Length: 326
Image 1 (tube, helix red, strand yellow):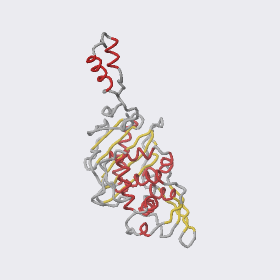
Image 2: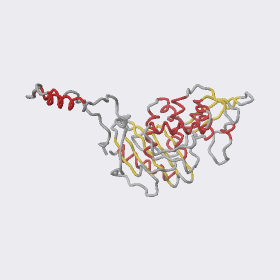
Image 3: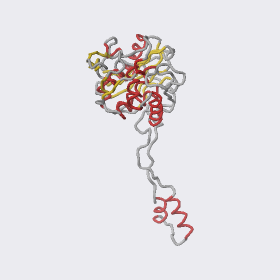
Image 4: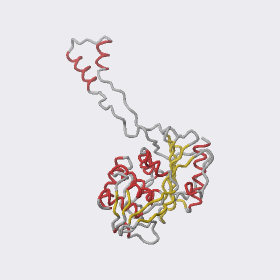
């Protein structure tokens, strides 16, 4: 579907009506006639010369079908976005408010890259090491020191909730202040159907987004080449200095099945990477950045699959129908 409902620029019309009046038989000897022509020309000026907000975005107000792909009705939402052509290739309930699970961490990464320096040295606080045993962490310990770039790798590849909290406290001083920044920046990106209360996506009734808002956030992240380089890694080796100054080494592997090799990429399509998310309420979610054979970029998302094998089976079908066979 072509994004025909995107906002467009309007051409300036300053002086055109007045010029027409004078050139095509108008008579300036009448004060009333001159005034009417002047007002018509001056008060219809286009004073705006910038780029309108949605000019380079994919926009769809309703569901968009895709030949060759049949959605699973149990999914919560799904979408496929052609970044070069600015088209929504597929949309299924992309504006429904949903629980995002760890796809939340896209917003955390966006803010870390916008407001932080990957070379910053971060000291891990107690809040980042207080997660339950069944909650995904990178094994950080109170007093650990590592760079913000290291934390971003743990955040985006291994989905460490401890990395998310350490980033939030480094950027804003507290999780609460960081959540305020998340909501402010989400609004600035047009993700107006999102509300965040934490940097990691552990379930909260007041923490939600939409598939379309995730596309907007991912699209903003992808404009930074450092982000693409980050998510393109299959694993990351980190050296952490503990509170006792000893150094330990760990390897954080990507959790999405294409990067880990647990799912085969569709022929002719390269999945560079993305972000996974899973909670009982959100189901199994993944949002990905991929390229076709000509290196044209796409973003795809599926939210709410019942299990991971089903999630990636349908994702491969979506990519094949929307990109390879389009």
